[in-house]
Length: 144
Image (cartoon, rainbow, N blue to C red):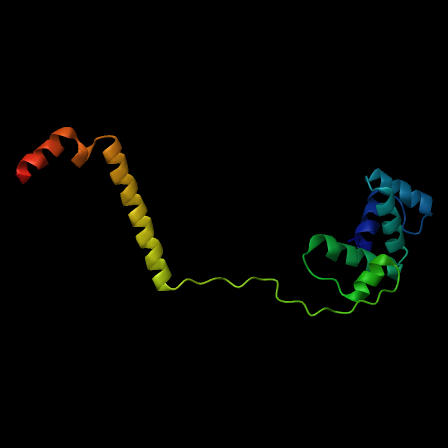
């Protein structure tokens, strides 16, 4: 998350040496709009604290990915020793349900039947097409 070279470059731009006092470095970091906790972490990275760099790497992995943390990373983030036993978890992806061709055929036939029923019902209610009074009368005469 915090790179030592980046922090040194920021300090050089502000005219502060990396060997300067903590207060001067904090002022330069606050001038660059760092928050208090970020300034503390950047100062620790600058002073090469390995624990802090591990915490920042673990925090970056926690925030920026969907990956799973291992027990060492959890311990480093919490600052305490944690014994975590790996669980045998099932695959989180669901199996896709595949439909056979018979299922697809039945779905198509039901869709066509429903649409035809809707069209015929609308024609009947609106007296349109074969249900129009002149057409219906012609059909009755023709059948005699």
